[in-house]
Length: 146
Image (tube, rainbow, N blue to C red; front, side, top):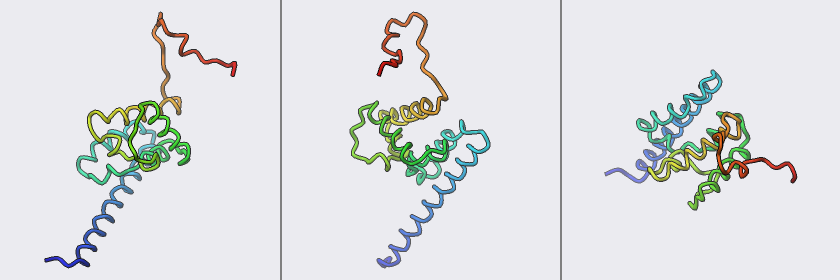
């Protein structure tokens, strides 16, 4: 039988290993971004989350901060916009949402896709193009009369 002290030490060791795995993954994300391969970040994380479940606990604000060199405040604001867009009612604080949370189930992947959309719009990596003859185009016109 394992003593309480040994059990505690095993748990601490497992937490340290998980923390190290997340740090390594975030370092790889930074390297990908610095070498102009930001488009490979999500595929890299998705592939490695299968092998290293600890990566599911990487926080979205950390990824945003590394990928786009944003502050934690701006990253959390983007998360807030994402959650408001999809009417997310989960009780997790914006600063604590993780990859695992964003990919919790097939139905919840809207969290990840909306977050990625918000990032691409914020960073002007994509734009919304209305189709020619779109009947509701006036709804999307920007007003400068504020």
